[in-house]
Amino acid sequence: MTTSYKVKFWDIRTNTRADGTGKKPRIVSHTVRWTVGNREKSQTFKTKGLAESFLSDLRQTAKKGEAFDMESGLPASMVKAKDARTWYAFAVTYVHAWWPHAAAKSREGMTDALANITAVLAKDVAGRPDAEMIRKALREYSFLPEDRRPAPTPEVAKAVKWIEAASLPLSALEEAKHTRAVLEALALRMDGKAAATSTYRRKRAVFHHVLEYAVELEELSANPLHKVKLRKIKATGEIDRRSVVNPLQARDLLTAVTYVGRSRGQMMMAMFACMYFGGLRPGEASALRQKDCHLPETGWGYLTLEKTLPETNSRYTDSGESHDERGLKHREQRATRHVPIPPELVKILRQHVLEHGIAQDGRLFRTSSGKPFPGSTVSKVWREARTYAFTPDQVASPLAGRPYDLRHAAVSLWLNAGVHAPEAAERAGHGVDVMLRVYAKCIDGQRDVANQRILDALAA
Image: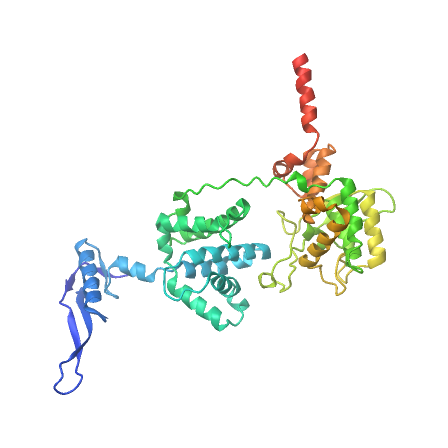
């Protein structure tokens, strides 16, 4: 940018147009004129008030000693403001930059959080679409790579146009009030009720990462989140011990699953058994292949976990399917995990392969068309099985409310049985510190042991 401090201002010129012979010319516009160096510059406005305001801004800036850009004729601060990106434009750029490096579930979480944030960082411009349409336009169009975007409906196109025009500049986040407004919005659900602490922290983490990226690109001087404090109860991630089933209840549930549907429940039972007896995550069980299983006729077997099939919306996956094959959670892409499994699960898996066979790619659990079971189908089967296995009071309780609770029950069982924490963590694919924090309240019987030790010490 070539700049100059040599600036001269002229009077505002009034522009008129003749409306006909004998009639007084009509004022149509007003032009602000000035020179930067030896170059003449001008800008025309519809009303005199706007022209006077603009000229006043130029004069005040020159009085402060700010240099003017020779090309545009504007002060350097105005050029910067004019060229500054909006939050919306920067968020789109961020999505494009990070999409290739993120897993499908992370992409979904990223776009979900950015949709919340972008709706807040907008000016009060006429024609604002309703919240649901803004969210739809952002998640299903704007925050997708260009080669994945569907043809926008007229409603979506209109909403996108409004967002582009109304979005605040990224630099507005230097003001704490805008950053706080975002945090307060993230702390609420769509219905206005308080969001879960874990949800708030997840979305705040996305916001923090976007702002760090802006600082890295020197579009913000510092991360404005560091200036705003919004108290939110820290999420411990502890498991509700009321959701943990005992071995008898777990077996009753697995039996009840086989009663659901003509064959769906029977084909899923072994998958649920892997979550309970092996402590597998649902995505790990879904990806389990025959070659991953060592199933001797007697005694313990083991599973070698290598892949996981988490489910998300197909627009976020590389394959275009709702299940995207990934490496194990929190591990390198080619890392594996060895999980010993008790004879009871070995027998269940051997029987499953004998009765139901395997998919073409070797997976144990699949629909009649060979695809992984949809999460909605799994949840439906599980809800029905709970009504068969539990009393009405238990059905209304958190007890095994989700299939994932079988994994929680498995790890809790191992810890209660006295399995050393590092071994239990290795089987579950957890860090030891995370496992002990999450399952601390599900370890039964420790209080009585501690009480007795204290009494023994006092007696001594």
